[in-house]
Image (tube, rainbow over all chains, first blue to last red; front, side, top):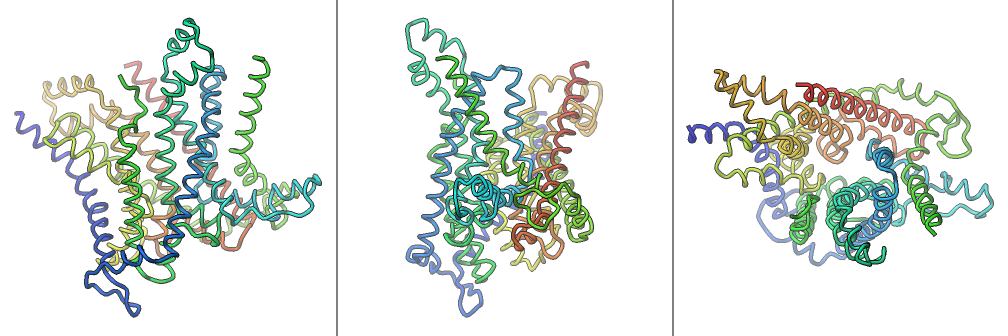
Length: 283
Length: 264
């Protein structure tokens, strides 16, 4: 009986496993293999070599793009967390319980526009003749519209906009799990509100911060749309350079090597933060 | 002091709302612009860009493609995810931990890398780019989520219902369709609707794998090349409205289902 049940378990799990192998594992193997091919004379040469990795190590354009990516994503993580934390704190502790769900619902409204549309809507706001510039000019605050779209600032702003929503949710979830009695007890024992925050609330809400930061990092580092639409082509990030290899150069092998760089960065960040990646309370 | 602090809190909340909602509000407001450019001053309200949108056969085609790809990929992700979660939780096969890890792995990889991998593989197999490939791509990104959602809803207590059904002579198929699925329906619906929403919104995989027939995000993208355009605002607003309807539906369904199951 036990034996038969295990066998049935495999039958139920099997389709999902097969699909994962065919549509995920096999393509990843293909990426690794392709990264070892070479592009020569407009054709892909299938003799295996480390040429693409040598290019990764020596090409300054690629280094610049990688550095741009890391800088943009780091700024995004820092600013989203700094903006989201006080907001999540206010929602969790200052907003009456019955309004909290509504406030959070309003916070994530832009989630439900499509990703492409959301990036485009930032262009509306930031363009030379866009909402901000026109408003400031008509109020006489500035004489000339200034350039905001197609800059790194615009990319970071659009990223922060999206990831404030993500981090607010994860930090809020963490804050709500902290038993109120802990703070009350500390206050009874003479702790100041500041030290309650620094020594109880903040440390216990770190899981929410870490999960939010991790999601932000993983989703932003591999994103092509926001940098392309809002940031423009002046300072390329790694996904933009990768897409350039695919669409303009037809250099799939080099693009494959870049894809593996992205994969390894994410895996490394995951490995570092893995043990903190849970929103459930530790017992 | 307390008053000042709560005043500051309110100001902060309003500032954040302004920041978060500004792009969406600009999008929606200027979709009703009467003139060509979706920038201030507001010259509407006018529906001319919606008329232009519905007259655009490529846009309508893309809308239909997106719905089909979303429903089909959502169905398969949810079905595969449900079966795997059910098999794992109820039969505890050898290597359950490894199975779980394998099914969840795609979640940790950028869509960009997954899309690129599928496109390289399709090239290798000489498969032409098509909406079928896009659907396959969306199945693989949503399978881990559907699996995780259903798994999180599986409770050990419910196993007794399944055992009772078996004792009464039900075969495994009957147990799944008549007991397990109805009990897990809220989770299954949530998994399906989330998969649909993510597929509906997904850009980069579709960009890699679609050919002449495209999904809505790709069509909007290709219209973006002309710069700011009130018609793009109209398209964006429509996408937004459809997502809101789907979500409200999900919410109402979920409530109805959970109320019914409470009565049982």
